[in-house]
Length: 249
Image 1 (cartoon, one colour):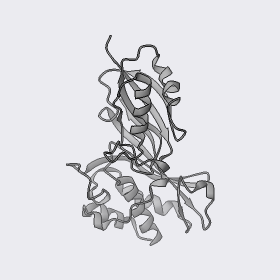
Image 2 (cartoon, helix red, strand yellow; image 1 turned 135 degrees about the horizontal axis):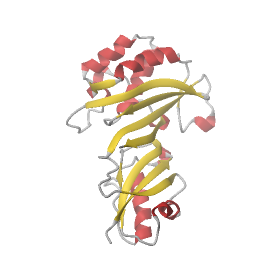
Image 3 (cartoon, helix red, strand yellow; image 1 turned 30 degrees about the vertical axis):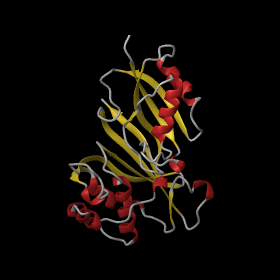
Image 4 (cartoon, one colour; image 1 turned 180 degrees about the vertical axis):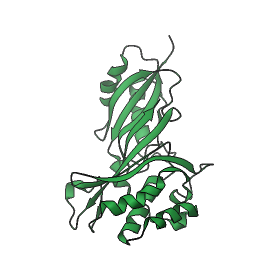
């Protein structure tokens, strides 16, 4: 019998990872750690493919990846515990399942969902420090949403991507761009068909900069239309960003 395609849903604390993708320099990455666990389970190297390559320090609660396995003694759902037994505590497989051979974690994805967590307070709480960006000034949700709204739709997001992004096209379609409160946090939620390198963090950094300067939504629209990274604001810290879901089908 041929190999099975196994889909994994993963969560990880990105604090001590140099991003998802394996690097030539040998840094600690999520892909490298999980592939090592898979190799120990299969007794040979296994290649893992992810829906999105999160940057250094970025977290995930809904990353999706897949691999091909000839291991027949495990049912698809049993890979969850089997892989977790080989993983460190800052990365976990939440679910494992068999999918059609044609499935690809990256190329089959229709949308990715990211959430960025802000803590708006003059004083920060220590146990939040690794998972949010504390803003000293109290933020206004209505103002934030007015700045986030122009991003919805299909646009050229050159202004909000790293100048080192290798993508041929900088056009992406954003389905959701909004802020809301969740407990003590202000959450920025953005859902799109795909993202450019550092796109979410640059969008968030720009919105916060404009909000603190009490700029109008026109400024955000102008930045988008400029198609120039120098027209946007700073890149927000990685620690507040989570890849929270990938939609297929």
